[in-house]
Image (cartoon, rainbow, N blue to C red; front, side):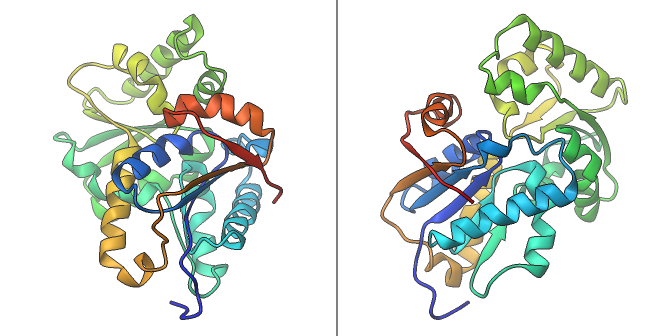
Length: 274
């Protein structure tokens, strides 16, 4: 690590609001640290954009968090983790800076949940097309068979606070049915988008009770705690005053009104340009 680096907040990045569901779990488990959340709401959604576009947008936001003093940034976004993380890690990181994603923590432990070795992935179109979950799961557990299905309507349903509407029930039931039609032995489903846990009551209604449903927030929070414990040289560069800051590339008033759905408490946000 760079000896000249000063301790700073842990950065949490997402294309919009979904990462707040992960941030909530991180902040609950590790409340002592300072955090800066950045949502690129002006350019959401990322899920249908090209690899190059997602990479460029993600890099811009990550470097904005570096400019704000962050030494460690978490991509609390599956699409950014799938399409941008590896390239940023390999080619773009300044000395003393680290970027982590949400896919690896999930794929490292998913074998603990399945007995049939048949796992379903529900995700955005971009994450499914990236094949990131298949690739990462097979790295750790080549015997596991992975079935994927994209759910393009789930994010707008959540962001428009239409979780309990007739439309939400229609699309959730349809998408789960289509995933499970790929194999009758699927016994574990990963919600591979940070928006999806907000639909959990609806998802459970249309999912057989014997199937494990995995949300990423607690997994990522535990993984970060372990990472900081194993990498003391990084942990010492994470300031500990329990302070939170929220930024959005769009209208902060609109961001504040929707953020409470994901974060579970009111927040105050500021506009930022990247």
